[in-house]
Image (cartoon, rainbow, N blue to C red; front, side, top):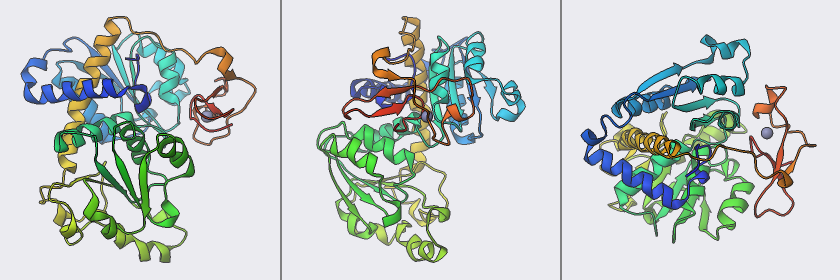
Length: 362
Ligand SMILES: [Zn+2]
């Protein structure tokens, strides 16, 4: 296992299976874990508010018997005075045993991981990665269905900007016999790079449809996401399409009896409250699972680091280029002038270089 969790693909399927097994054991025997992290400190460094994710991390650490320090909003800390992420990481390294970092700029948790010897968990960086949400989704699917193999997973809503969907596709694509049904309006289809780099590369069977009703009967999992008004070309277009992506009890009439509905939350109106009482609605159980998988993750990363996990380093120098500039507006290099722009040659893409922080193509 690596020292840090920055991207869900940092974990092998074997490591994910191990985390899920640990989370399931914690759920079955919580008392056995109540002192596992006694005297250990988790630093929650939240450069933008995300109350739900922060509370999940904090309650996870408390239930392991540990302590929590940190900030929930960058305006009240030294980082508002312009301290770099690298300096903050070096400082916190002296006080805490593990870091959970949320940052509006992509690549910030990776920069932190390179600059400290304690584990760093990416708790969401811009529109880039949010691996503990994906672990939460995976634990929920595993607990509800008992397996990953052979499932037909429908993803519905905003598939263009929805990072939780992209990570779920990447993680689930590694299990045998998984099929995807991608349900979205034309303007919010899955991006080309996700299609080629994840689905086509892994040889995954998938279909793209416009109608939730059409997809419903074949699904084992329905992963709902929010369709935001501002993503549409016009108000008229939004009003025409929005109801087709709202899940109601009527739309569930043709669904399998053991299908499960997931949603990363918060929901706005994309699942009617009438669905909540249906036993197939798993989204509140999913929130609960989020705490348990974070407990398993904190525990494993601390154990792993105590055994002397390898310090994070840059990829091998011969795969890097330092003469290119990243122009992605949400990249951490955009706000930290002294951070070197570095691109790496990617696996499986001929001659393609990507920013080591935000993965944007050169
Ligand atoms: Zn970048």
